[in-house]
Image 1 (tube, rainbow over the protein chains, first blue to last red):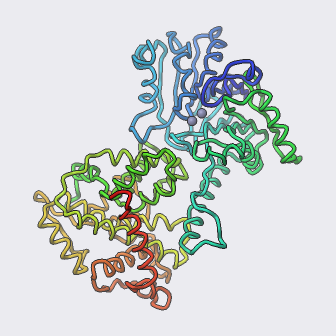
Image 2 (image 1 turned 135 degrees about the vertical axis):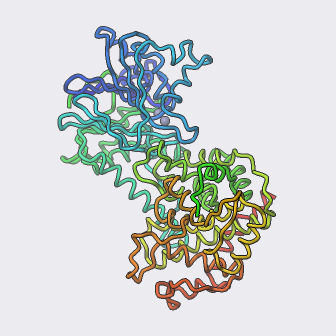
Image 3 (image 1 turned 180 degrees about the vertical axis):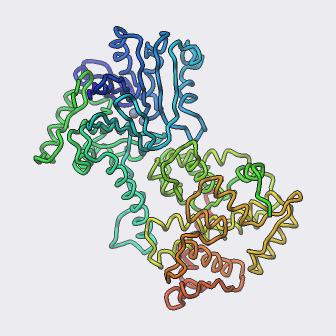
Length: 304
Length: 285
Ligand SMILES: [Zn+2]
Ligand SMILES: [Zn+2]
């Protein structure tokens, strides 16, 4: 299996000299199975450079899996050129919107409405197929299979695991590891407050265990690490993203073989990112059992 | 006894949340930084809102691998913003014309809240697993929901009958006639629980049935036993209904649970205090 990062930035495309090495495009990951099946995780602006590489080999069939429908994960979709060319087949998968009762097709079609885009979804020339996924539903894509799990984010978000011939990659999409909403203060808490804390914690522990079981042993763990712990606890709690420090803990616990930090903050320069990684090595010296820690970088190809 | 049809379920779905919860949540969600704790606790006082959220979350098309039994659990699994938006979508519905007096509505609301809080306390005292407690609280909260639903579908006379039966403590016998069909409240509850994919103990609570899996031999109360007992105590506290025989005395021995039964005891005081704090916010009046 082969992975290429096509967009590693969170929130908004961030081109410019400060981000030229790690890249300014928003989330998109190209995955190729051993037999060459094309699986695309998210359709941020990074899907546009990917589309350009595909033009030499048309017609194509590809499978796009949307983690969630925030702009930075879908904004490239109307610019994914193969959708305009007859003969191509684009299969899009994603979650149901439980708040507005919309299928993935209905949610995505809205960004191609008259006010936002000149071509309507109905007018696309490729064969478009949509699948609204149930949690843990497995989709077979040739020699690979893709399974999802629900993550914690302000909109419904699926993390995807792609497996092929014994190798696997897991991508969180955007995810905030849930925090207890009750303080942990055994010494000073009355019985009721203590119970509130312990009970909520039991939900968190159960959920984290389910996620860890799902991710356990993956060869590549690609994880939303938008913030540092310091940034997170100073005003970003509840925004739906993870931290570098927590990602390290989780990758250790999941016994992942390699850890890729992604969803880089738009304001973080290449230099900032590298400084950050160096400081993590100092603060949490890696052990021999640790996975490799890598900053996801646009254009980099990984062979699993 | 007839099974309620789709039309009735559709009407039940349209029930608006209680006025106090509605006001509370609309006020608190004008602040984008509204603490999740306040929001979730407000949702957890209201059986209609709680059921609305669980119905959406557990809906087949949403496709959750495992149904969830409380909004707090949903907040951990899918994120609090989704729970918040589901709550707001329920509040979007126009409050329906309701022939109930505001005091009656608030009384029902308080009773539901008290039953839920007590069921959780009983379950905690019985050392049931922590992970089950919130589901048991919700089961207590919605215990009498279908009675309220029938009120909305039925007529006022039927509801007066219901209240008088309730006060007599003979809930089981309650039957209401609606447009020529008769439903037992457990029958409507079962239909709701099945159509909305509610897990145990919520299913048992709405259906007013002991789940099959309950081990009758066990000395420990089951989640549903806690709900039944909580309802009996709450009725005794708030409606002055005499404690009636539930054949659960072995599972709730006086020596262990005694203080919970006392309407002037600490538990009654604590729950009443929490309710008053929730229901009477000076900022809202
Ligand atoms: Zn994002
Ligand atoms: Zn997002």
